Length: 156
Image 1 (cartoon, one colour):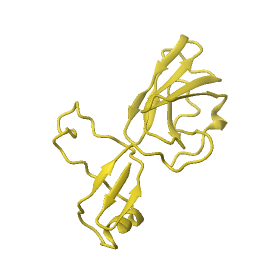
Image 2: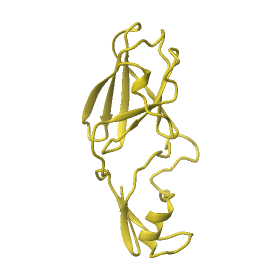
Image 3: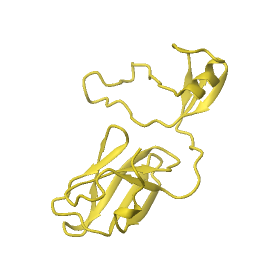
Image 4: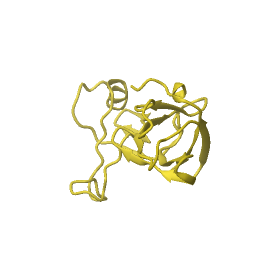
């Protein structure tokens, strides 16, 4: 998203959205809250050390990334669940799906958890290789094959 403050603009990546279906979730009548690292904050507030600023925002806008998608695994060695973070995507993700060779044909939806972690518990052991299908909010899809746990980057 592009966030513009009193003295500048920055492109930010939204990691978590508020869940509007839960009590206390961000609804349309609630102003969004942005938590920015130091440098983006200084850019949009002309060096203001901390606090609040009136901002406008729009998006999504393309994130400045290059190269292919990559994945960080939180469960790379456990066949009973798969938890990954998809990285290096230009737009926010809408869905992530996996195949499970022992579970049957087709793709299985993966649940999104806080911190941009996508977590799947297959009905049978997950085996290698398997496919991942990533769809962004614009409907564009990428299908990739995860051959083994060495394809995962170290988690943050």
